[in-house]
Length: 165
Image (cartoon, rainbow, N blue to C red; front, side, top):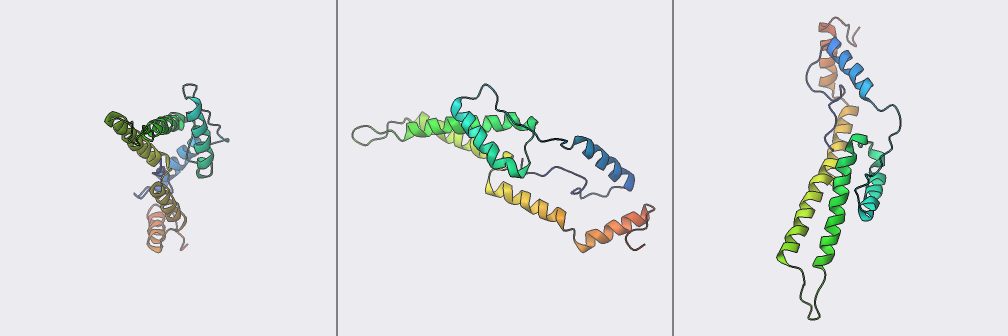
């Protein structure tokens, strides 16, 4: 889930003061009130559970995941577990050094790899996903001069006084 949430802070379209206040009030109701605790579902095997805990630990600082993301994270961990199993089959060779893996096993391994890449992107585990998050965060922290000016004009037009007083 590397795409940032559409919060009132990063909405680009013009909102009136009333719309902005309503949006901020609604966001406040949806924000986390307490620390979340993600638990792996019972259908995961032991290897996938270890991957789940490790991935959860790595994502802890990003504060992206919520209890509603457990299934997505679980599917990712299950796919990683299945990929590892398929990859181990590809590494086996006979006494002459020829690979024992069939074309179907190779295709299965590649399919798991593609699935893992897709879910990793959604969960913010890839470098590009994290870079997008960092860029968005930086954009939120430093509004440019034109954006501040437009906010002042918008406040003034909507009945406020803007920063100019």
